[in-house]
Image (cartoon, rainbow, N blue to C red; front, side, top):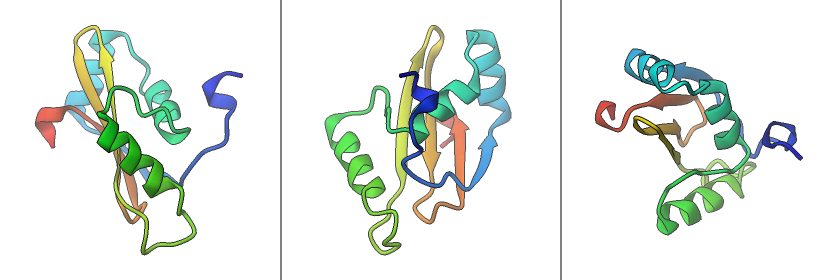
Length: 101
């Protein structure tokens, strides 16, 4: 089943992308909506095991605001890495470059 058909694991809040990430993804030929879909369905990309476990824990408790935490995904492109971050309070999800954090 394609990733975009799977259920969302958490609420993304407001969807944002930095101008730098938008230009970068255009040059890399990557659709930002594809990265967003991967992030929201639990494909964390190339994060370390510790971040993967933290993401899984943060999204396993969506009904408990006290246990929610930031969710970070990282994806490699032909030009380098892009991050997708959802805030702990689920107010926003932002696509950005690592040096923009």
